[in-house]
Length: 350
Image 1 (cartoon, rainbow, N blue to C red):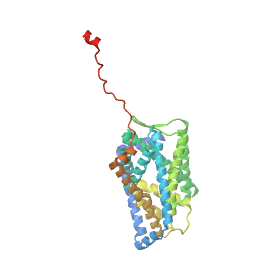
Image 2 (image 1 turned 45 degrees about the horizontal axis):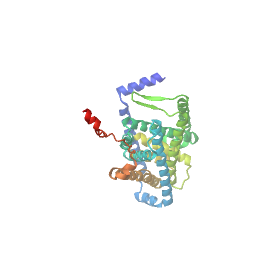
Image 3 (image 1 turned 180 degrees about the vertical axis):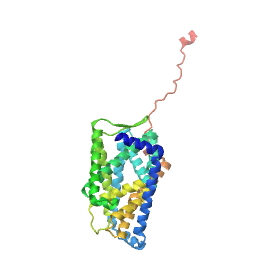
Image 4 (image 1 turned 90 degrees about the horizontal axis):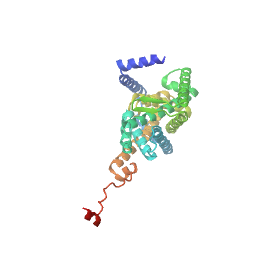
């Protein structure tokens, strides 16, 4: 079975190309999302949406902002964990936090986060002696943390509330539950695999030793906390009526987020929103759209502006740059000592 999969993958890579397939999938998802948005929102009244935004309690917006701050704080451990995994635990937390916050907030908004986020990370980590290969390893381990967390949340959530996922993928609840169980089985197999012995992937000078079993559980925990904070921010911005459970919203939110991620659209714009509007059809469109707009404000726009400000200060203010630069080692002077003065005996011998 594995040989067949490898042969198929090799054929696709040589004859078609995975990049072309990814591009087609991305365009298809975006096109479908735009058609769905038009069908849902073509008759919406913009004044009603503005009124719905104004009606949201400021306390709810502030609480959503706190959950977003907690989410970005959790994201800093993605990089810190990755640095320790590749053997660069000497890089302090403040540097990992700066690289994580700025790379994720900029990558979320500009799209193609693998490229944009990597560029921001390299700009920061290169001062600490990390090269492009090191940054690529950090991105890989951080991405692994992201996917492990998503798979766990989605698997557990859909297994518990399979009908919530049906609003997004339009599959029967029984099929969604089976898929969720398969995801959880795959996670158990992966954790068991890395638990038994050290596992290394990659080739030549690009090799990464995967975190072992206990550390993989830490990865999963980090991902779960991150997603829980994001979903909580969205939850407090939802309309009060009709009531929806947190787990149900969490399943819809994660599924919509992954669709947006697959589209490569900046911030999953259009795709994420269409998935949320379809799955949460029971809510008033204007009220739900108001919540989505406010979520984009607190999760995307505000962190993006802060990142640009921080990076700008880092480039133009020397003291701010020095705060995140490695300490300058004390170098012992190698200047040659002056030659010894000739003594009288030396002069006489000469």
